Image (spheres, rainbow, N blue to C red):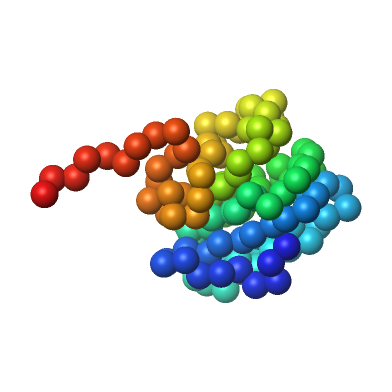
Length: 122
């Protein structure tokens, strides 16, 4: 887990790696809460690219972060690359809430993985 969330443009990025399970969920929840409690912008990117295993114990902290950021007019976007994360979100009925983003830049721009950026007039 990252001890302090990084600032990416006007949002916070919380990075996790290794296993996210019942033994690490409280540390992960603390990182998510720390990223939101400083009065900063209510935009949070959760970067799970370094996570090798994740179980359902992280769903509650992610949903708490989502609800808090939404209440303040923001969002939570999750960056992940492993199919297990998608399967977990699908099994919990959260795939629409937490679509997959390929990297923090795409998450910031709101471009889910597998979709192209919209054309902008020049």
